[in-house]
Image (cartoon, rainbow over all chains, first blue to last red; front, side, top):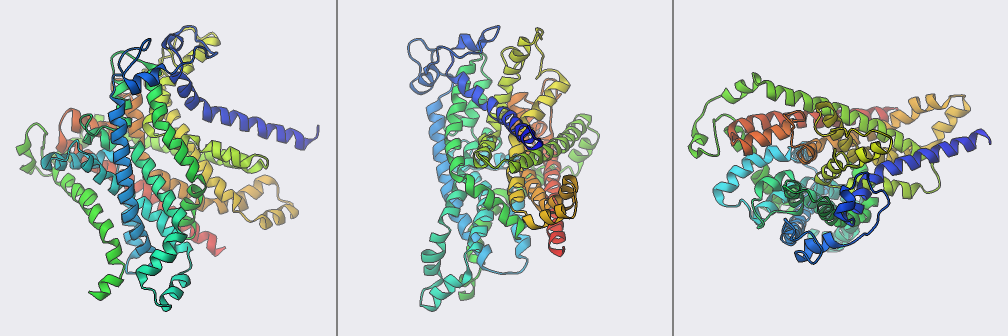
Length: 286
Length: 295
């Protein structure tokens, strides 16, 4: 064997170790969701999976059936509904407002533009838990605690900066000349935006939307304090409540975790291409 | 009026209104509250001004400073390790020609996990009774279960492992994007001139990569506080405050002990910490970008 072959083997060996390190924790959780409780608790550990079943998912969705561990302690369906309503609505509003803002930044020059941009980005830096304190005080005064509207409002504010960052970059890639030509041909500015710039940046806006959805779907620190009951608690808060239960049902918790990860998994694969370009060109080209 | 309708401000108006209502005004309230002895159980105390009393108490509060120090130390170690591992992974994937795209996609796996899931999954792995870690060690004769999440040092190491697992891929992906964008000519020229691979890396690859390092750091520093979710899930800051970070301390002070005034004072310090981190890396990014364009 020559030196190059040894080198190649070493590279592939480290790549395989790396993949194992990255994939094992997640896959272990997914596997546990399908395993019987006895096997999970067994000592010494049962390594080869056997008797895989869907009992945990049945319990979660249909409130328990024969042979399961009884009712799920968490009203998963209500939490799922809340998660979907809150994430979809807040994403829609954030993308609408953020795209308009991003267009404003990309197509207009004004005094202190970079400072405004940085200031808007900085609102994203504020730790969720720090922001939740004053919002909690305000919301409890005006009755928005534990409501969808309250949480949606907060998530919109959370997602706007990032949407602006991404759409600003996508709009700047489109040559200004295109809409200028349309405008000399008699289009209004709005028509030019609607017929030229918007369709061209469609994929960029879509990925901004998926990002916003993921951020809302995954958020915990803010919701956990602004939601009090099944009226507005989301799945992430549900998972936390589940782990705080007195009797530990690991397969059940893993099933809920699988429930949370699946939409995120699908959506991230959809945007993975835009993820890298979107994040880097804004930073490198300035 | 016409000028206003054609200008940028009408486009930015919705953004500014929402951010003012949901972020700016609450922050002002938070600032006011930090100067009062406000407790959730006594609503009247919101209107009593006590000056810097909360901040003065914080200065003398050992628990606070321990949590503060632990947070800074935690971030310093985690961010540096993530950068080093991310760079290593990016260089490794860059060397692989066959299956590079698949590897890159697999590398994104941890990015899909919300912090609360990351916390849950590592809580399960490090569980002293049935966790993957102890079950695995048992096969190698470690019969006495190791209390990963109970022992002070081990618990912090476990949380660090979770944090690194979840965020290293951000660095790896962004640095790989940087590596793929490096022009091949200067590298080949250097090799012809007799540079070894370390010299090529140090003098050509690294300066080109620097802006990407700082983009990754800036993006990462935007959400350092996500460690809150992970810690809350894995240990809740316990046992006996051994894993308390600034954010879990804020949450406990504000919501459990209902001392909102004090919690807001702490949260102002945490906000400054976050902004300082972001500013530092953003400044470095601008600097690296300028240096690159000069050369």
